[in-house]
Length: 318
Image (cartoon, rainbow, N blue to C red; front, side, top):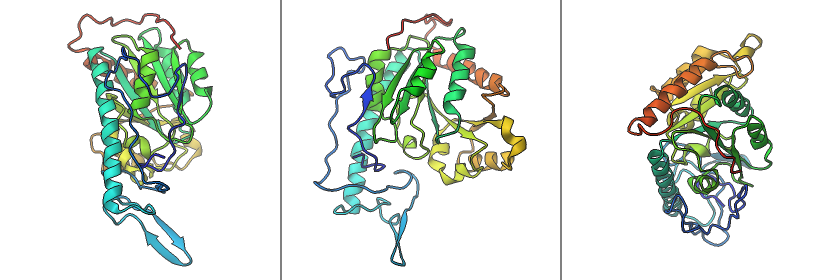
């Protein structure tokens, strides 16, 4: 059980990987080793609100009485656990994740790999946007994808159909990727020096905000078919993201979505967030997204003058 968000773990499956949490000595991320944080027997978290960094609350109504669970130090309630114990467990888990994330980030930096963590709620069009991006840019850059879903390899299959290597992580009951899973995926995927790696996280605007994967940037994808108030409903995610792709703008004539209000909400929680309006269906705005990728990748390559800057076909290891 993930004590940070309440989702289940221990059911992770990575394509081509015997996920017994033992690591080969030549692991590209030698710091990886896993010791699950302890939980008292029979204890489980129900909800821990948004994250450890932002105010959050959760309430239930029981026989006419409203119970607020967001007012303690842990901003959550769990039977048999004190607030201080819950805070300690969360700190242990996120601290361990941060160790793995640091190792991942070191690998990306040493190899000049631009890694982007794509986050969204389900139905934002994230996979379609990624497929179009890969199709349009695969001859310009060397690309690869780590795909996260609870079940199936459907999205990884869609990615691989473009000719770009992809590796599927199934999280079972888990609702987010963590840095440990990504470290294992890197062992097999081995993104090329100077390449771009996309991590398509599990569709969820809550938990992925709290888990650093070692990426250079989080990129939030929000569809205009969702409410324009998503940025203030889920502020942690938009606070953590450097770029917001407002997707499916081709549908705006048929909706009452207020674009200006959405952008204002996003910048209310993150004044520095960049916003691009795109449509993966029509291609509108996609060139701006590609230009952002080119410039961001150039920044990543500073200090790595010998790394290849042109696309090469890479051996599909997955």
